Length: 204
Ligand SMILES: [Zn+2]
Ligand SMILES: [Zn+2]
Image 1 (cartoon, rainbow, N blue to C red):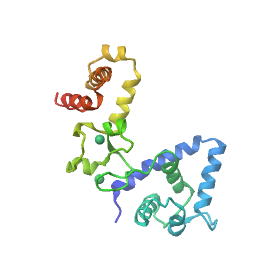
Image 2: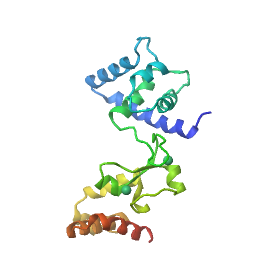
Image 3: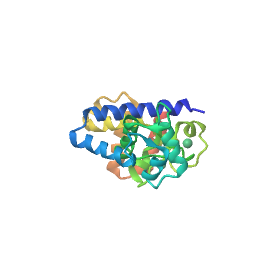
Image 4: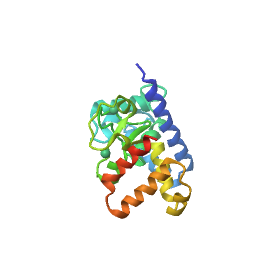
């Protein structure tokens, strides 16, 4: 059975990949073509599951490979054409293939990441929407440190504003959070303070 959620998430990745391809340099287009040729070992213009399993990263289990293959196969004909492989190229080159830290499902669509882990740990802590919603996980950082990627992007944008601008425009809670974070930075107690700040703010 098709998981329609996953199909539409993969559709988003395909659209991004197609847009990248349209604007790619000749060199990049060549390397995408090479990537396709590597997968298409018999050169018939299509990649079968067998060819796919042989060529993609050995760090993935066969089960995961098959699940990625099925999701990439947009028209469900059992092989991948060039367009469908572009999505894989995008995932391999531009983003890492990320798994949910709790259920190990591949994260191809929107998901949550722990801000504290992103800032302080070599490994990220990522959750699929379902695991986040269920809330049954044990993690050493506050629940409020888990942010979806739109929120993370907003936080990043705010950080690029000067501290002055951020302080004078403090109406939104994120801007307040930023100011408090910078204060925490200046007194050198970031890691213990940030989550407290975030959880205070989220209660308003
Ligand atoms: Zn999960
Ligand atoms: Zn964390």
